[in-house]
Length: 332
Image (cartoon, rainbow, N blue to C red):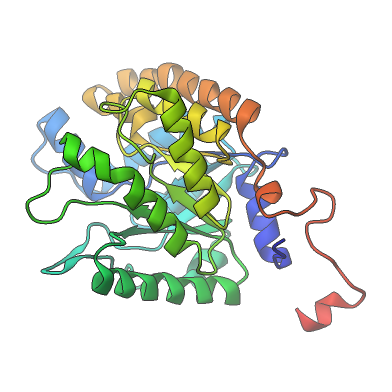
């Protein structure tokens, strides 16, 4: 049984449904979104205002159908609050990492965003902090370096009493190709061991990759088994991420993951990526407010039906999430 401080509890309540399920839409993409716009709209120069415009469109259309949204500090978080498109009852997660990664002969290194901090995320009224880390548990030296970064952020989140979500992403080393059956065969073990190592640190929610490739593994019983192993490996509540797969694939992943112990989903491009193909703003907004919104509603139904409430994963009761003694505020 895990006991959380009151600030973390409040933050987790803000980013989940009243039933304790995470229905979260990711729209914190920066470098990848810029690349998508350049490719789909043949736009060589995507400026600050254009990026902000896309974030405002995404948030306005999709936030009402979520328990929370994940936004970046560069183009989205403050801008969506200021623009009045993030409802007051919708939770806000804000990313702490810089976009991309530092390349190193030993592997990929995550950098924190310059000029940004947990204190500022808390101060702006956000509900939670998210950190993306590129992670290979088999690359011990670089994995230890990434664990130190996670620990540093975790300690600051404890200090400011704000929930901390970690998103580890598997990546290919030299000579590997993520699109091959060979890499797909290794993925379950990599994702499950990653969950074991990262959730041994004081984090609150794991944003996990699906521990298999549906392109190569179609046996539902096996997929459920992989997700159950992931659930056993994770010491904290976990949500499934979309990693840019198509919507139908993500829908299947969400159903299987939630049946195996996930506490919901945190999906991005699988829900809204086709909107970027439209150069006309009206067409983009129409797609987001119809197709993408309908996808979110469908995923929410699946998660509500099957997912495990975050507090149950921690072994705590919905009506006593922590013990509050008399005069608790004096020591807080």
